[in-house]
Amino acid sequence: MDYGFIIEDLENIVNRLVLPERKPHVEGVVDFCRRLSKRYNVDSKILEIMALAHDVFRDVEATTLMRMARAYNIQITELHQKKPILLHGLVAAEFIKSKYGITDEDVLLGVAYHTSGHSNFGTYSKMLALADSLEFTRVYDKVNQLRELAFYDMEIAYKEVIRNKIIYAVNYNLYVLPYTLETWNNLVEGGN
Image (tube, rainbow, N blue to C red; front, top):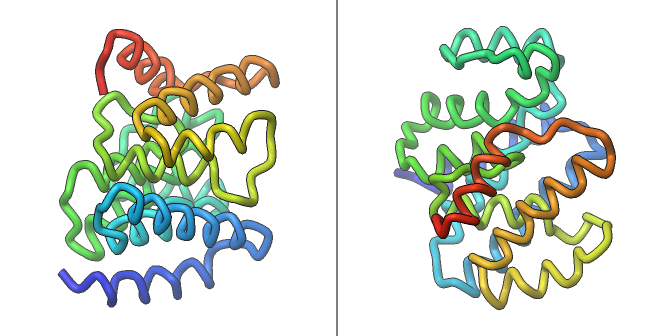
């Protein structure tokens, strides 16, 4: 698999589809992924692909996202119907699978569920979730502590990021995503 080509192609797609105000976030996720890859000695190119793909459809109109989800045979839940934006990761995962032939389950899960977390996340998907929440344009309480933790112990940091997502959703009267709750419960039970 030609990772260089995939990265270059995804960069072009990001430049076309991602709004200018979101590009610093995507670039921040790429940067944070590179840093995590050095710390934990994993393939930075795989993480870079994930980072570029994760929000590539974030700024696509809701009706287009729904149409794309149907084309990829993604199950559209009642929550997706209320908040179609929640489909952007799922669509992105199917896109990189079909366009580039990426079949690694951890990569696809990471891109699909970077917003919520997932109880079957492995190393790469956890790193993407951390980078998405902790990249350096993010500003919120305890973000600096969580960043430090990410480079000290990825597993503990991931659990704390999931905890933070739940607290944030409750504090701001937002939906707590079903996969976030499932992930939290799995982590409490000692799972990945």
